Length: 89
Image (tube, rainbow, N blue to C red):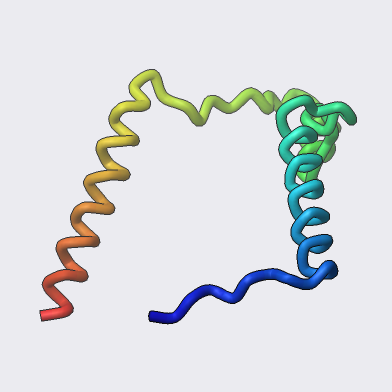
């Protein structure tokens, strides 16, 4: 049985610590949003449609029944899984 290599070097341990710190900072930035990124305009369409007179940009993409989407998603995954199992035979 092969064993995983151990990180003995100081450089290896330091790089893992730096990666951990970067991950913590990213998660903090996503959860707390200290730079107010969620309100920033992104993409060409975000400011283009504001300039068009009489254009209503309030489009509702959601649904009142999100459970339908979950059923469809898991049904699709289940069907794909069975198809792939059938293809392996």
